[in-house]
Length: 149
View: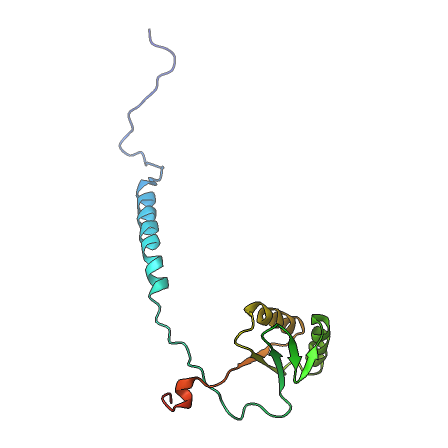
């Protein structure tokens, strides 16, 4: 016996298919993902970078230049004056930053000093509102012999 309702599984010829087939989209996205995952390490390791050589530029320092020295024990000196604490150094630099925020701070660090000491100094300088920082070095042995132009 036939029921009152019938289910028609046959589509008429003029009926539009309204569903989007996402399978090709997913396939393309997966292929692109694989390509990017393969090529990203190649780009990051094949950068050609020519770092600057170590040079001293005479004439950039004058008598009024602010030089902060870090010795091998991690002590900080402004000029030749020992800063007994980081608070003292911070207060001094905040005063400089308020007077002249464009002041260039020159950092001279002993080669035996720990990087942590220099990192702390950079943090104190930044908190004081100073942004112009330069590192002082001595000429390399090749430069003293005249091998580097």
